[in-house]
Image (cartoon, rainbow over all chains, first blue to last red; front, side, top):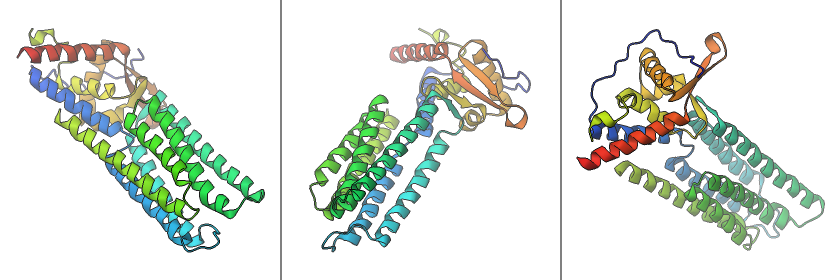
Length: 222
Length: 99
């Protein structure tokens, strides 16, 4: 034992006898509150995520829907999409920072490694997009089907692997759903892929949010 | 079965809350003294006394890092502490079933 806790300033007492029913209630309530405070996600955050996906991808779809031939998202469309995504990332990072404040150890190191993996994978997808462009692949692929489909498949695959490791089956399910939606929506036109992915992913995340809310309510009632 | 069967070190509101909070962390993770105090809303002196009792019993470990104002004490539940909470929960369940 490291024994770094000082003995001075001691004011605690053993607070008398505790009724077993009261002890059970206190144990359940404390466990539930602690789990909620350490939780890296919340139903509200997921609900917000569903709206962000729909609005961000919807903005790009609005900017490309009348293009013939397809040239790719316009500057205003990209500004709206990246603006919304940056705001979303800031919210998620702040939420997670609050949940992990004061924490140290294996899980925290694993989370940092997971974040590094995700960023590296998304950068690699973008680099490969540049390769496609320089090889003269059509704009429908380079700025249409490829970027969104590849990024969603990468996000889904990494998410599914991480959630399976944590045995978080609702999280695993939504990650698999995002991969399937991305693969299926790739059959839509380069214009339609933005809207189809936006609606599909938004519904999947909305379902996940509802599942999270249901689980929390169920846990509170037991 | 009576309440005497319950581990007296855990069967105290403050210590029960300390152990339950630390048990909610993934195995091998530690929590800073400041965050634990904030979560449990206990005074520093009160929390230190309860932590010391649990540490003396081998239910948790504390590790101090840094010096002066930047120093930080991290607290983690040991395997013994986790097993003690499991045993306490089982005994509590048995007691409640008998009521």
